[in-house]
Image 1: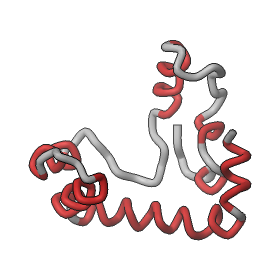
Image 2: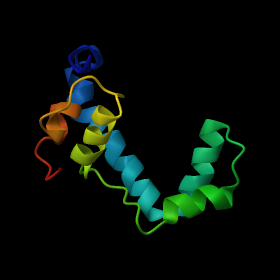
Image 3: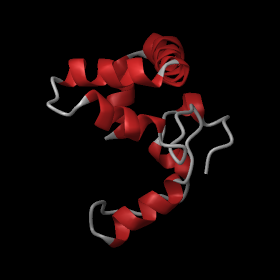
Image 4: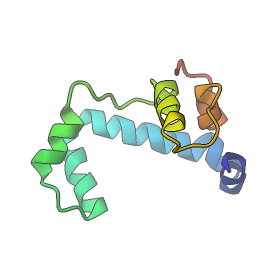
Length: 105
């Protein structure tokens, strides 16, 4: 499935457009979390209050970063709970190659 999605995106998108868009989104969220909450509500047409979404986005235990963190633990939970059929051997099994150089786990 991952290969089919990756191949459908095209080489240019995988290597340049998607990582740049993800970095821009991450930087935008970290620069102004209230504006990010407002944008999230508007784009999702959510009925949540700005304050509720802002509280989630601004929670100090939540980090918005490019580096995948604790993915192995989450994947293990999903495997044990039957949400995925195969347990990934590495966090890299779940991500496109453009982030494999980051210090994820």
